Image 1: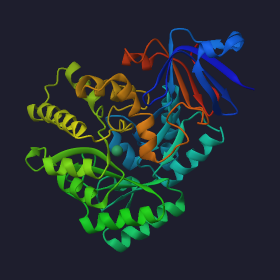
Image 2 (image 1 turned 90 degrees about the horizontal axis):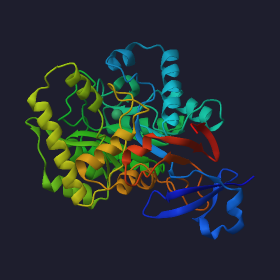
Image 3 (image 1 turned 180 degrees about the horizontal axis):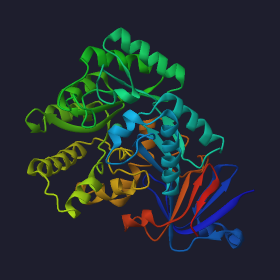
Length: 400
Ligand SMILES: [Zn+2]
């Protein structure tokens, strides 16, 4: 049966806002949208949400479903039993959908957990967003996130691992192109693979019709990712042994190849706030690094690089029900309009995933819909004041 909602505004996730609009959902899909005045007598049977904003369900482009989001995230990842990882993942996904996220792009979790929960979500066994999952990451031996990875050290290893991941059910391929902060004895500023290795990884992924997400803190890793023409660069921190240093030619490379950047802007922000509240003084270098990072992101954006939002949910104090912080920080620190910030988690995110099925509100799209109180196009904070979350046409979370 078709259901129609009225709201003071409907934002399609791209560029269009309908004031005093309606949206009709039937059989899991959006079947009509427009001005309330075009509904005629049909408006009387519609559900009026009042001074609300209807928009696409949010896509969190960077999560780790089995991580604890605790201070002990590494210890937990190393020592949790398999069953405990599964329990954490179910709970994390539940938090995500209850906060308005209708799709997570999971950037690294054990295959058996990620792919099983993707199925469980689609079958309605658990309350969860749609899952678009990499499963295990590709990393070097002992490299970043080896504990949720396949360790590979040569072109041959890499090809085998890409093929095995696709065979196991990977929706896309995630590679750790540099070291990372979470893994001891890895170095964020250094590349973990040669250019030749990363190109081989990307070529084989493309051959199997899979997009490629490359974790890159260090600039050498970003250079390799550009050569490999990956789909998304995660973090894109421009780290060097001397700290964060923007490099113009590298930034142009990212822009010219049309590579999306997922800046994971809010990662660690709650940890920073908690430290400040506890009166722990942060190292000046750290504060400075954050400033320079946001500065670099502004420059990337000015070059036309398209951002997608993901908060690296699961890492230290970075929660699955706090994804809105990423959008709030895009507005506050990068100067994005609310529409543009929301697009990084809806229409642009869908483009980076490579889907036309969802990510915007339009006739024929899967009905992943978020309704919030107030005007989210004026007040980004309104995204936290949820009326309901709809997944594939079903209201799965209702706060009304
Ligand atoms: Zn990550």
